[in-house]
Picture (cartoon, one colour):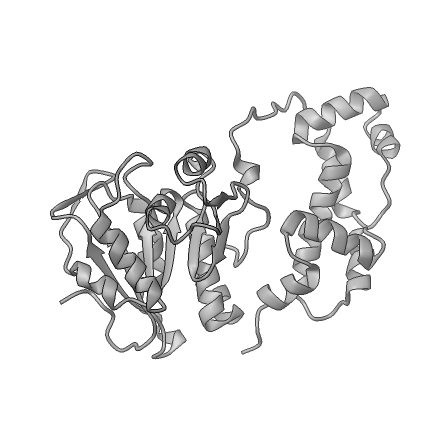
Length: 326
């Protein structure tokens, strides 16, 4: 019998197994959906894995797997997850594509982690929509599937019950988001805490693009950064920062960029948004109070910078990620 958790009656999540399995990506799905979580009640997810290749199957890390399910599980699943794929050049069996099309047509949700987007793309279901994958594979996905708008900056994207996520760890973000949609913010926060993960990570995968890492040549800036973090509500000017470091303006700007990889203004904005996120997860302060506390001065300025960094408004963030009372 396939390994479906007993005692639960919620959505059936099926993770695909294939020869050359990406072990970490599969582990993400099994960890989030496959563990018994008695605190979630009887309606929590059921989980199973099913092979799409004849076994035994090899997995990264020198492991060999023998699946206890069959491909027929795809036809029963409410959520089907493709945990990575063999490679951008690896063909996707037409039989698998048809099973996935049929599953989507009957209402199932399809999700992919990292290179698993190539499997969903091969079905044609992503045509006309927006998808993401690891930034290293984005150009290849565009080239092979020009009908898909490829977003290589987001951690995950979804449309029409089709979910794609970026590099491997972004799969955690996507799976937690699916939990949030199915069971609410409190459940998502609970799962995230068990994983020692934030319920929502700020920013997108653009911050992880392969680029030269600025080399920190001195620790002269470090005391200033500590002071800035402790006084974000103040209206710091670049000139005041330079004076604080006993540097000329030109030298300060050069040293600051070497130390942080960004400009003083952008650094301050990122820190203020990060603090605003913490305050938004509390009920005590309204938008004007939060804006004043973190140094933006006005709710309008807070909304502008928050949306630019996070892609959603502060109000949306608060509604989506605040811990719901028990």
